[in-house]
Length: 580
Ligand SMILES: Nc1ncnc2c1ncn2[C@@H]1O[C@H](COP(=O)(O)OP(=O)(O)OP(=O)(O)O)[C@@H](O)[C@H]1O
Ligand SMILES: [Mg+2]
Image (tube, rainbow, N blue to C red; front, side):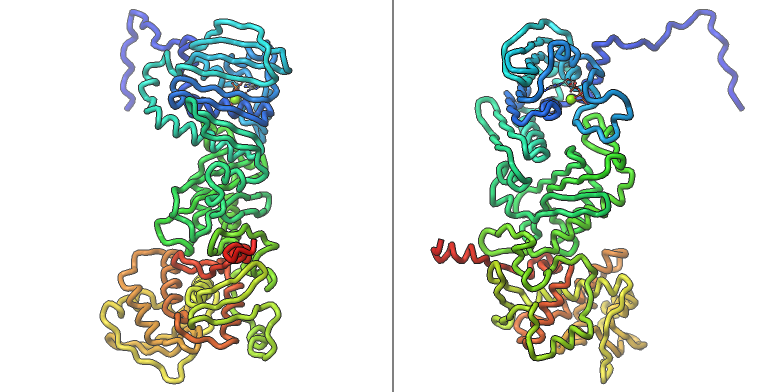
């Protein structure tokens, strides 16, 4: 039933809707673009970069609350353009909506300068060529004066007393310290986005950053923090389909030792993207203790029409047409980087290994393959048992029945035999759980194992999965199980002990679902089944372990976040012995 309309009033009601005066509308729009001093700094640096600047000086006073000044050596503006630039929707960067696809500049809305100008005391000095400058002075959005000045080509924008006419917004400004931290963050972000540009940042009277143009991201990271910090990262550089992912991923052994930093760019724009971070973190799976999250600096280049940059008022986010494809590309490229020897731990400062100077490169592409882990083929096993040593396997020495050592082109390499074998088994078990098959060994005399009630319950819950790992378990009455076959990792494998240890580790683990459950099981069985420290190995066993490790996706990391390989470079040795 539709309720009857109220009777029409005899008196006309005054209209409740009115168009806002332009000054108010501008202030409201400014709220979206200019949230705090750091957002002013961001917009001004973007404008400088869009104008082709190669050198940018930034000054902030009182955390940017009193004054912000950004000077550049870019293309500058004529007098007419300088005045137009302060009008809303005035931009030189696009002409039509179609230009938005793949827009190569940071700016495209023609909003930033008018927004900043409407809530500050504003001064713009600009010259398209040395000597021919214009100065525009404005406050609260209205121009107070225009004169000619002599200055060098480029532009300087000064913004003082931000929000002087918007007390509600001013109240939201935080302490000078806190605003300063955000300014520093924004400048660092822009500096990482454009390594080729010189940046200098001064706070009050102190020069805080002075960054010379850099050739590579690693160099810029070193200049922003320290060379030691930059050396903690593995280089990422990978193309999947139309997507190019490059940058730096923290070496697993170093994660958690300093505060975490994440920097992402898409087609040259710094953005936030939780999904992409999750994808990169997924690549670290099994290499980090739970709860630790890696630092990442990743640059993505994707086709222009696969991303929409105009979805966020401060352009801090983008929308992908096919997010899944992008995330998988990120995950694959980070994983590939972690699979290289560059990601292994090192004694002393780590060398910057490239694929060419990879210490194991002489022994075939150690860890550079992206193929699924595999077991040895018959041929390989046969080769292994022949007398002549394989040329692609180095001469291996066992130390303390615990470590394998060998010499590579770049230094001395040590492998922890237990961790390494654990990594090998983990990848084999994961492949088996995800649908592959697992070689198993039938026991001549089946084992009868008496279980505690909790272990019997764990067995019940994980029976299928244990069977796909190579266990063949017979019917059992009460709490007794008959074991017919076991995974057969090595001759010293103690089948009963492994089963018991595995079951007690699995006790109570019913909640985890799907992949997490597989990982937990594979890691548990791998840990229990792997050769131990103290097991003396025959030469063929060492070689077989070396080859199996080389074929792993992540050979340099065990499954608990520790390293399997440690290297000592010749450089470091020479330094220690005073040879250089
Ligand atoms: N540092 C500068 N050097 C040269 N020209 C500039 C500079 N800053 C601004 N301009 C000019 O002023 C115009 C307006 O700048 P504004 O930042 O308001 O808009 P935009 O950069 O075009 O778009 P957006 O609002 O997305 O930043 C720019 O399009 C550009 O032509
Ligand atoms: Mg702009």
